[in-house]
Length: 290
Length: 285
Image 1 (cartoon, each protein chain N blue to C red):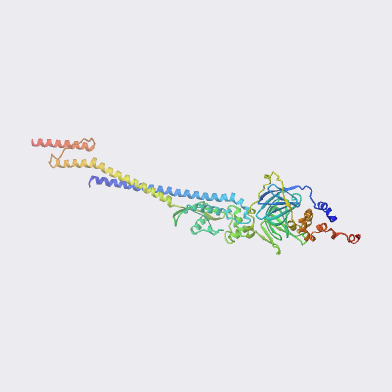
Image 2 (image 1 turned 180 degrees about the vertical axis):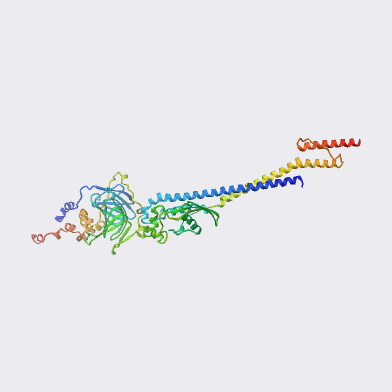
């Protein structure tokens, strides 16, 4: 096998290994960053929803207490406020969702779906769990969900959610007496669940990865070609010429060519050495003939 | 000219019961649309800052609204068309009294209490908020907060049975039906409420330092006076409006129904009440 093929085989092997290692590391890193970015988005959305709840409880509800004696205003309910605020956001960003998934809600729209019920039960069964993160497939693609428990921590919650008899009459008129009662202090009754789409950051990560790997491949290819060119011009061609002349001289053809070089590198030294060897051989042959 | 007629101006002046200068007991702090005040027998235009005295009658037309704030701490918001009569000084009498024949009224009563008189019953509110809607004999009310007592009236207009009411209770009585008390205001009532009644009433008295000059808008007509002359305080209003008999238009409107007003009948038809001896012993000419 010719030297250049051996060289290229080794070079290709090294390049391939490096390509795979670099690809693996960069892919893992990019995917991790993308997931972290998604998680940050989700946490921000969750904090916005929680802020909306607190604002409603501390500032909006007290102002509407008198009105509530005449009409039940769902705007005073923190869950409603957070959900409606998020629905406004969804008009421009429909892939983001927020839900206060509840096992026994007053408003049926908040009732848990199957997978949401599983999340709520995790919080109910392990009191130390403060956050559950997971991924799921949605019609819009892969989504990451972040959830936190909704726990009854204030007695004011029980004003509307203990029994139908204790609840405001205006609330019963609007929602009926069948749902949303029987809650107890410190009970986990549901979960705040924010879902954010993974596709955009993942696509961006994939695109970055593709660009990076493409660039790496291009660089490797350029190096490969340059090395081949250098190897050929600096080594292979010169050695091939040397070999050809040496071969002819070995067969007795002293006029095959001269071992001449201007180079002082290893091939140049070899060329000069072979030239001296030919001269020595010629002189030896003359002495023998002589 | 009949001899008695020349004495009528003096008699009317003495009988009109013109009060000596009354003390101001409150101020009108908010007027939306137009409103007027009946003081004595004269109407005056009401603006924010108008001071209110005992026996004043506040009237607001349809879609208008006026709010009174009393020195005693009560607030009363009237939405028209409606009237409210300040029967007694809410600063002195415990409780103060407002009489309300028609309209929507939201009252915030100070701890000393306030009594709201309606056609079929009175409501006494202590340190709470009450919304009343009356239309003559038909009344509905809602105790928004605090506690109240409902005092039914006997046929003679005296205090009858008393019921205690709690915050959140609603009551209604039609012109002919019985009184019904329920928990919570029904949707129809809540939907019909004047819009600003669903919020707490503001206190604005401290912002109104200037006392506007009252602008007289004329004297009360018989048509306007007739409901008061037929109501619970008919004798009071007979005395109050006696001076109006000087007005030929008022007098001619009264005459067909003068039998309802004994005091006026005596003034306008003294011959009916003269001793029979004076008639029979008149010398022949």
